[in-house]
Length: 458
Image (cartoon, rainbow, N blue to C red; front, side, top):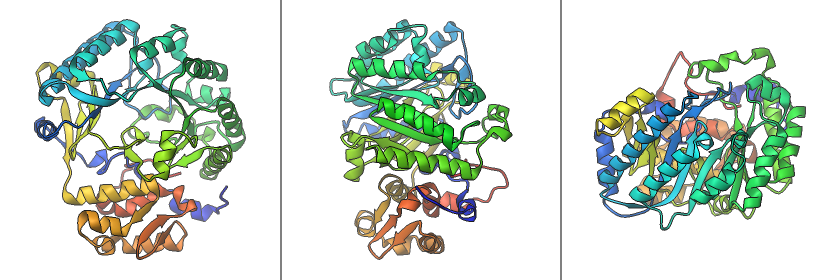
């Protein structure tokens, strides 16, 4: 564990992106469908497999910490209409691809995708098989709310029958006081039951999501949460920092400020959890993931082939990712795309026969270079200056000369080591890699804003 003083933490407690994309979504431009047509035209140049992401935005209630794109809804007819539109979007993508395209990975996120009815799941998968080639699919994953088993005790068996082989369980915290404070009432026994069910079914990979920095959390309470999770021993864990963005998600204001852990307490929670997990046999992966040594994620991290995308850390190769559904994001051949952010707008775009794109970013050469560097830092904690030069034809130190002052400062404070051959993140710097990465973010360096843009690093 790291013992650092208040002034040191305060200096690093800065707003910083999570860099699941570069440039970040704040830098994407309002757009019509033209960039989407360009991206799909590039995609037709070869037949490499792609990945699909399906966004199911519906939740029955709002968790106060939530930063996702969700729609609070209990009406089945609204969900049915959404799935019908989602199928039409798949048909449009099928046409733009010129036929059935091999698909290696599929991910369902939300919202609460596990709350879809069996009938709607079956309908959706019928059309997925009709429109995409799943003959070589490696992974079909879903974000699963353990509370989904309340109304359908055999939902796990059902989704396995559809082909799902990886599941991510939303737990966040096992302590009742914390759950009450964030309005997510889910007992540890309920989470444990879901975990044991998926384990007994033989799912290839089980992940558990946790969040630190929530109201009523302390190092002592989170010590018990970590103990509860280690009792399960999932293949992977995600330990996310609570992203406080009330200017984007006003419902977060309902959490009492007096209940929130201080900056020092939040850092102590994370530092303890990271220490305990690694001492218990987990490999720390990048910023906020952990996996058992034999897990493919650990192997990719050790081989320095890990990639970062909208789902966080992922396995190589870096494939074209097509996002389907309201607010979904895609990355196709150097083009970022984002779908419409409301149900009405999404429906209207798709029913008009057009991609639902409302924002896009076509990467420039400089964007591609900086994306490579930032994702190397986020995924491997080291940048080879020789590899950089071989790939892009520039000398690293010359290309980033405007960042030299910040690089020197971070080296002085012990966050990085900078030599003629490598820029390496230190063990202490790994905890603040988001801040380190901002030194190479051209948009972050140039933007001066009086209003907040990103959550803070601690």
